[in-house]
Amino acid sequence: MVIFPAGVVVFAPKLIDSAFALLFTLFGVAGLFAFLGADFLAAAQVLVYVGGVLVILLFGVLLTRRVQDTEIRVGANQVWVGSLVSAAVLSLLVVFVFRAEWIELPESPPEPTTATIGELLMTRFVLPFEVASIFLLAALIGAVIIGRSEER
Amino acid sequence: MIISLQSYLIIGAILFSLGLIGVLTRRNAISVLMALELIFNAANINFVAFARYSDPGLSGQVVAIFVIILAAAEAAVALAIVLNIYRNRDTVNVDEVDELKG
Image 1 (tube, one colour):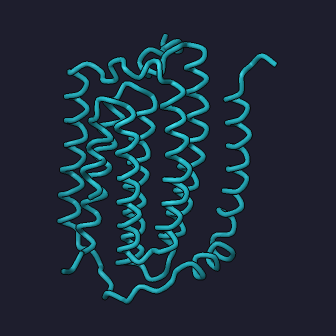
Image 2 (cartoon, helix red, strand yellow):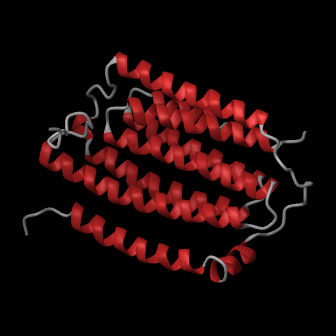
């Protein structure tokens, strides 16, 4: 469900195809969050990623359309090296996942998480919360300044 | 059917590797950004899985929210930069923008 569209994202020859495959990947990850009992996070994933990031990426795809039909891959040499490197990383991760001894808590029934997350944001994580707000403001202003056209 | 912690970690690892392939081999800057989003999502799956299985409390989910915030800001700024490069250079291929190379 998640893996196949992710493969399409990486290997699709046309940019617009990988953008739409990314949509399904993000929905799949939201579904995984729902399985894990993180209801607020699943909703936030759909809202922010599917509603925000993906639309921004689609804007980028459409605004740079003229170069879209050109070759978007690097030479075969680099493809092999890149695939080899990430296959090595993948095998390492899998080996460690299976060899480590994970402490697993007993399954507990999923509860609504929104209230607890809000409380944590206002108590234990209040400093990262405020830093994130400043950071978002800075990113907003920076994106506007970088993205606007020079002539006025 | 019992879904264990390992299966989520494996999904995260596969997603991360696919993102790594994308970052390393794609030529179009926007494809590189999409692969980066895959990597962010892999990290998020791991955070939430650990929060569910190994750590009482919801700290992992809060961290995942911060990761989502960072990813959104990163996408906005990076797209602005890519559009500017496209306007100035008429290309979005990452290997053709090499003025800083000595």
